[in-house]
Length: 413
Image (cartoon, rainbow, N blue to C red; front, side, top):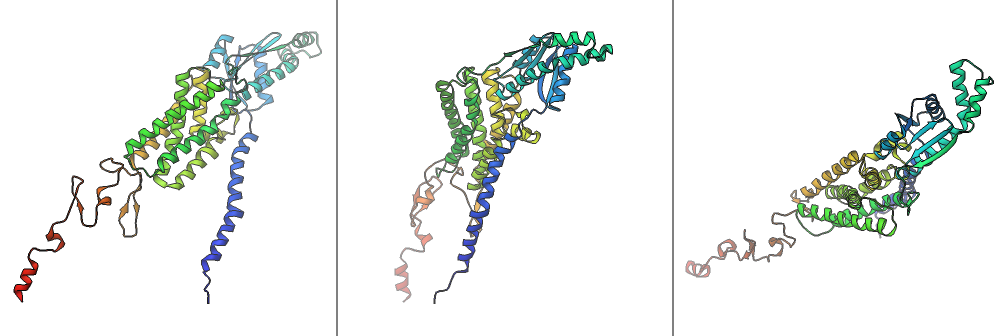
């Protein structure tokens, strides 16, 4: 009679739960991680400049604050040159220069095409509402009605307000909407994780310091290849070639080192944790397709503390803004890189075997740094290793084969 294994039913039920419940849940969370921040894109304390302190400038501030409450963080500048300098230094995303009868919108598509479009639209709205705002200012200042002669004169003048847009820091001519730039973040993240898994999960034994050098060299080479494609073929990174290559390589190193460190300590589970942290959190929270200030507050903060977000902003800074405003992003990437490489240098945590002793993983650095098997693994049963690494036959005394033992046995009889 065949005895049915009770574990068979349990395993089938567990598989069914994984297929029907766990996998759809993971997929839905992954979709939400990307879709939810994109559905909540709106300005939140977006730094913009206002030139001048005239009544028209004050009206513009009131109009922008009323149209998007909490959307803008206003910075006042004395003249247009100061506002342009602030944009190039990445202090603000753009500025509004308001003069009688005209409105100039200073923007930087290289900083964010989404923000540039938002500023252009806001400028159009300000120009459209300029007559009402100006008449309101006259009524407040002189106590006259909008229908009065002074109010009508101001409204007539403001009705002719023209809008002019100036792109202070434009995108590359080969990538005018920044599509190539924003699309490169996800492939760089995935390729960095692949590098970490390939180099760390291999069975080749080597010291930790050699593994660190291997990771750094791989990221530098991969970063150079990515730069050649993005600029050489697509023209999306037109300025500062050395600094831009360094930014790409540092971004990849931060992701690769983190993945390698997690895999070194946690094994295959570290690979899954790296994918969740970098692909499903770091990428959608990076703000690469819009701007960090266009994402929800918590998402903005988390994204800029992870390598994909810090790397995307660093790449913008080195490519278009001469590295201005990149200090914080560099610090984040260096921190992740150092922590990950330190774990890799220390080696894999020994695992406990059944007899209570510890066994080291294949990537654990041995004392000699050799990649060949240890002498004890190649020695035959009749040999033993010496401190010099050579093998020699055990002495007869150790094997219990004493000389003339047969002769003494015969003498005893």
